[in-house]
Length: 151
Image 1 (cartoon, rainbow, N blue to C red):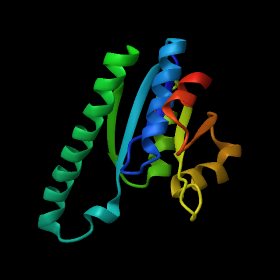
Image 2 (cartoon, rainbow, N blue to C red):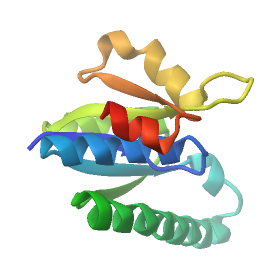
Image 3 (tube, rainbow, N blue to C red):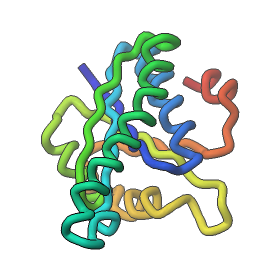
Image 4 (cartoon, rainbow, N blue to C red):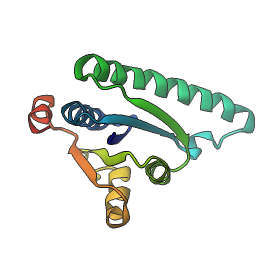
């Protein structure tokens, strides 16, 4: 089964990437893999606090994931899988794509802020020529109705 890979983070544009992946998966009979990466920078404080911070980050990720997963299951008939990793988001995306040959498309949401599309979109598009899968970039301010219409 082909799978769409989408990154779960705290950005506003993440919502549209999730929607797009769910709509496309629903219409094509594909699956959705949701990757969330805990940055090492978040854990670099004090040794004793790192484990607590890691647990809190995982708890926050799982709660955020459940909101998306419930919507995907109830509204789109898609049962996503959550994968949580630690490290650099770009590197972890590449590792996951190498590990799971069923992942066929990476879906990212582009920021509408003045600073550009966001660090992950910038990083992945700079390296898009050597990526083993295509990247779909979803505009962060596209309406849900428009997303549904184009998928």
